Image 1 (cartoon, rainbow, N blue to C red):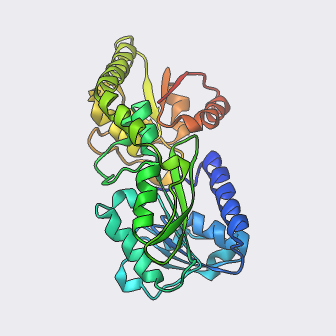
Image 2: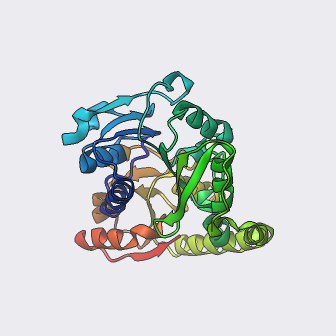
Length: 322
């Protein structure tokens, strides 16, 4: 599973600032860090490098041969799903990024983490997931797909953690509102805590859900029309980004052969194909020969980075972002 975003300068800058913030806020220096769903290990490496911490990372998709850096010798990676079997692995911080949404019994999972912490009250947890309020507000259908079993707003996420024995310290949105993060600490149950202002979102969610079908139909028709008109005019169209957003975008719109290629800066994706729709994943350099007329950016946060990459290739296609 090739999920890493670590080839993007934009993402790496965000990752580093996030690690620096957590280290400074909670004095994570010389501590033990556990990351559940650590992917290729980039965030755990940052936490351990910048704070001189020790780490244990759990992920069946970890690739030991790709892990580099001065902090690597202080980290143990376990190529397995985190479970009750690893309850003896303790830390001062449990981190879990972009993983909880893939777990159907989300409450059971958070409860398992709390049981593993046990009587070590005050142990910190940091979770990051997609922010569902934005998905509903912006009709971001490209962020709705089968791999996501659970969707959370600030309110539902805080209530989940509080119900499982955590005191919620902070709720925030990151990365232009795309990520929802929660910082909490293990507490004795029941957790007596007033809801944070960000949790009062039920009325907002009710309105967004009720209007979503109408707004989604309009957005889908708009994108289908735009892509089909460009294809009928003979324009070469590529997607920039070959991850889950691209898969959901193409399978939702059923654009067939209107788009042949998806560009990705991750070299481990090159030469592979998008599931379902079959577009080949190519490197940015491929575009020097293909010379696209229209580049559809799957994540607007990368627009400036992509524009610079295209300019370096001597290309000036039209850019549109989801």
